[in-house]
Image 1 (cartoon, each protein chain N blue to C red):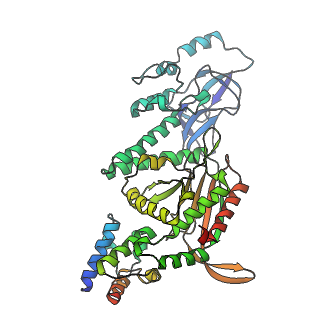
Image 2 (spheres, chains in turn orange, red):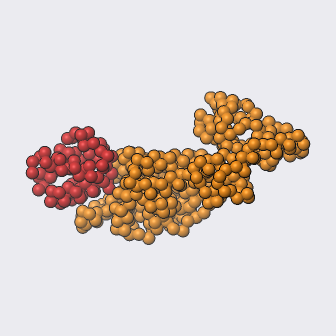
Image 3 (cartoon, rainbow over the protein chains, first blue to last red):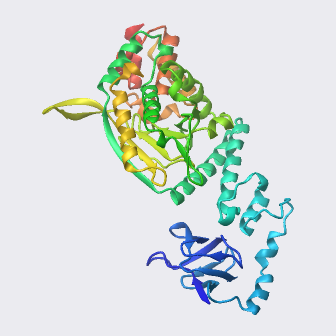
Length: 385
Length: 80
């Protein structure tokens, strides 16, 4: 028998709260499998097992806070047979009985952890519409959390008039998505700076010919240049869901900040196929509705990559957190005048710092770098955008 | 139009763009975009409103001249 204990995740960790078992008695586990989620001072941590065998008994109950070193579960190594007495105890395991409870109709074949089922019942989540990400496709707590977040986003749409309630829901949705992102996505960051002299000069000339209401903002050049760069390096336009899924449509999510806090990311569908005028018209429609929390649910769910222009007018650099299941987010800083050396000469030029945060499961530094270089080239030819 | 009226009109326009702001917070020489977190989209809406209210045409080159309440009032007065 092997005792699986509450691990220490650093010298400062004294205890942890078992949030969820990802396994049940009788399950076979192998080295590296995640068997539990534990809440610690360092956040929600996925706990792996370092032995191979069958779970004989789950000792610690979900919700229990126990000190480091406490025996949480008993494993029977592969070579040993589960003793008869243990088998009988497994049958009495209360967690198993809980699976059969609940007013929500659950297909008997549906695999779901007890905690996930409990939360689903409390939040009124339809389990049949959820695809599980746990062992053997079982539904675990994080699947329910995501479903709750999605439900909250829909709530934002229908309660546009009740802004305060919607803002609270939005906060919860952001919290859920960003926690998931930080927990699961191995981010890497690349940064480049782009000389904006040509782009801004082109924009000034173009706007001189336009009525005030038809003027273009710099962001439409950045969006279009990004869309064109994606066509060159399509790997950044993808989802990571049970592996890499490249997306054909380039639907750029545009992060719009709310003054009282919060951010919404409506999609600009097929941005590569839109003219600069069409992109500006779209922003004129989207931004006021986004700020009033009156977006449609489809606008919130179609993005395949995100752009944040949050630095505009303020910060020089933006390092984003990827919005799952996307694999990349692009952050544009404020356009500032900087010293620029070229051909042995120094001059002052308007410069934008661009960062790419990318999912290392999906893409590597080489492709990320190529994407940024394509973006840089596109902004040197604004007339072709 | 008196200076006070111009100021009141500008503050009204600002509040239409950003309903949650408190105009009392804004000093005459404060940078409007910085104090209220006005981005380029909102700033364009402000200029559209100013042009309409005061019957003027503000070229993009002049955006840099109208960063504060004081400079906006002066600009409107000089351009009308």
